[in-house]
Image 1 (spheres, rainbow, N blue to C red):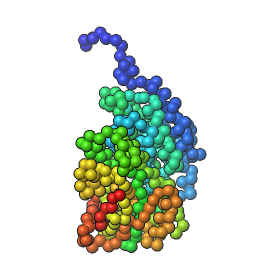
Image 2: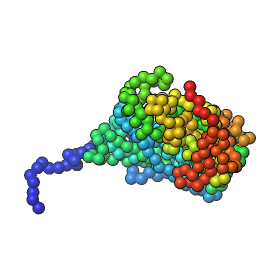
Image 3: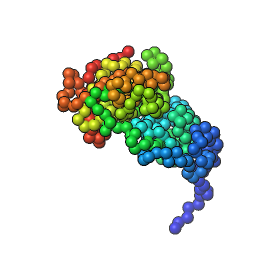
Image 4: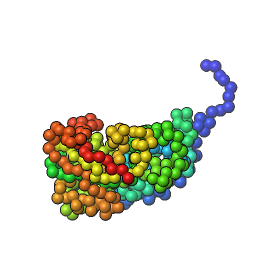
Length: 374
């Protein structure tokens, strides 16, 4: 082997700063501890997080529910604006609100951050946002990992991912098997774009030549501020709804990638169709901005973005009023979105039918009416 003279190569010289990682942990650990409930065993920094699940002894047949996700290219907006304390809310929303769809109560969450260079303050901001959101949904942030990947990611680049586990009694699992003809759809308003479709949105902004600090009167703030609006957290409202007097919940649908119709079809049984009235709500200004600025067809827009509906509850018709009231009591606007019927195979008057989405051989969603914009 030929020896080449050079200075000794250390881990730091290779681009990994373990001291920065330790500092990041010091900066974030109080926020993480703030999410810990009495069920958490041990503290921050162990190889694995521990949670006491003795309460599961009271379940007849407890089922564990699990979900994992990230926030997509929304992180590019956070990096461009050097604002990192909201992206954690998006991560928790994408993961934990998938858990509650089956009626499960989240037990714990973990996170993973990969970055080109550990900047302790930036990592702490990200984790602080995750911890704040975990506290809102009552879910301990039980553990996590920050990995430095020099040469793979740029110094200012990072990506985040998370996973959550919840529990539900087998007899209480929500989903398509509970949905019946005559059920109604209750929409829960989105806070904005949430965390899906940002490749489209970023492309529209880029082609238009708009800067993120451009103020848009219709939005009442800058483009960047609007794009970083955190994903709404629905878990508390959904759990309240499941236990609300006079309310029987048959299913939830979390409106994420693919839009409203594709996600709603996943929780409907084969043979049923949900008629969604596009005119039942006003599409928020940010979606109209994307559509007009990029000349994006409505069909592409509704198959990519949530258009103002972030979660849907499927309930019996006689539960509708109580369901709307329960959601609004949590500070989230809610309204009657549509109804479930036998699928006659017809598109209906000017209706568009979506079925067979995301690998699920389930029901159909028929979009009728015309979207209203402000």
